[in-house]
Length: 301
Image (cartoon, rainbow, N blue to C red; front, side, top):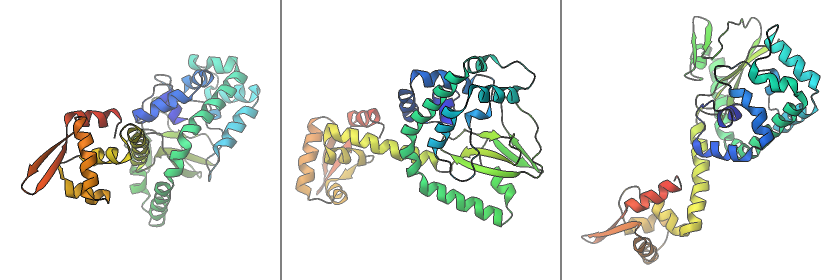
């Protein structure tokens, strides 16, 4: 949901540009139409149908999608009524209210399409998620709830027993005897999603610590593969490591090969204007040229 809000609805919350574009390319026209209300300017309140299943433990995305596809038009209209009460359904949600079946199927399609992009990343993030579970567990056991809650996001502040969450449509809610469930997400460094309405719990979706590294590493692997297709794996690797001038012998050591092989590849890179070589004493130093920098920037490595 948060990724759709960033990529489709325009509510920027820190999704990396490269992945935002991939999501935009993956979502069909029906998905775009259904996702637009999520990030409507000046609004944040939305029906529970957007996140249909309470995040207790792991709920497979396929179950979310199936729930949306199986929901009836009456389910959505009743949900909209609960969300907005006696007030008229806001303009940005009227299409969903008027054509509930179409909206449900379009939104289910959008969720499924986003997951096709994000699933490999989510699997890659498993070690970071496990570390976060340990961090939260340790804080709870040690009674450090105040420190934990204050570390979730820059948009969340905890003091004097009150949790303040930055929101476009602020309100006041009592936790009472309900549980507080924390849900780490990969949606972006500024993305926070909160559900206050469940009778047994309140849950907060917040940025997974280290998520930016997960996005970046996955993007770099893809970029490196693309550059390898252009230059060849060895030359692409050599160009990528030359962020500072390095000797030929050091390059050979890093590549695990003999200097003569490195010399051959460096000659090809030099002839393309991607590197410079300069002899200093007994060593030949290699540096990347501006043209080489521009090539790496093009592939975002």
